[in-house]
Image (cartoon, rainbow, N blue to C red):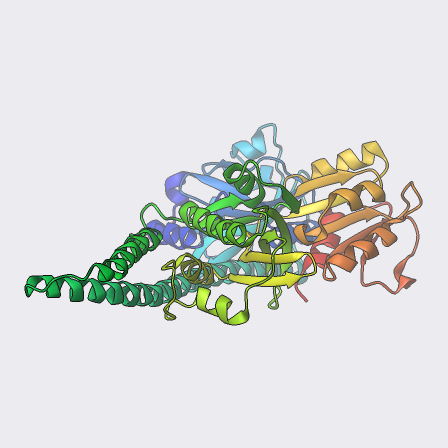
Length: 504
């Protein structure tokens, strides 16, 4: 079948519908991978796919039993599916089917013999891809249940695509609202700054009017005049970061920043204790203003000018994971009234320095907070910013080198995999709040089992998803872990990880 015959009548609109979901060339996704695995399992077929038909190629969003990421559109049968109006597209014996007998996927080394697919239909009319299964042997006709399963799986793909589209739209709305709130907060800072500078200008104007009227200036008045001038200069210095903050978005685009390296680069002589390695999304200038202001405030209040810093991963009251950046000194915490004045641009106070007020408004606009706290060892000036949802990190604990290596390779296309040979190594190196899931063998060397390791990590991260691999039944432990019995396939492992990590 030629490409011209295969092209849908309204190809331009079909491609626009496909690209609206922004899914082409995206990393593997567990939801779509499960659809491909379920299709393969239901049909007991060698290959299950979720395919998307682009302009000149067929790209596989999910593939189970096939390693290549895409094929040209010309020979692909999925192209025929999107051009048809059938509910299920079935090729039972490709060598003897006139639609496919001359297809290079059938006559060539690939050796395709059986193909069954249901179209992925969006907006009730545009066929953007398929859920399909392949075999290298001819098969008999599909049952009604077979056709229903394919159609249901295709509908699941559509639901997942719509969900991701809505999430992206919602994220854009939230980002816009956050920017509006940030600008409103900074406007309040600007009002405070204008008020402070206005008072100093009026004082200077009063002295100038006296001189213009021919009056003599009492030398005693020079002190207040000089003070007003100095305060104006400090006000201009304080307004410099605010001016940068109110520049256009160009040049102030949020960027991913690895907090620990950035902090150490900015303060090379400052001791930084790192508990985790979070990243945040924030314009670099904003980040530098934040950390320099917190450090300066801690330094000027430290009795010996000594300050230490720490970075950790923590969750806020809404369950969001974030980066906590703290500067600590041995001095006492200022009175609450002074702290409140420090963060409130509407309170007139000398010296004229609005950096901390700007920082609080800035961090609030990025969805975070700035705080001052006191402990027996001194005072901490800190900020909390939402962490970037980095690629899912899975910790794999398995003492058998060959098994550990094989599992890591198999999962490496979907996750960032950190591997350990025993529980002690994993517990020492891993921040449970910074990982997506723990996958561990139950029987581990060194005296601590996989279940015990999981319980220890749950003390820090109570909601950590856990998959325990075992050769015998362990479901009676009383833990809400997901268990996987040996022997198992990679599809079963992926399915267990998906079960463990699903919301709720």
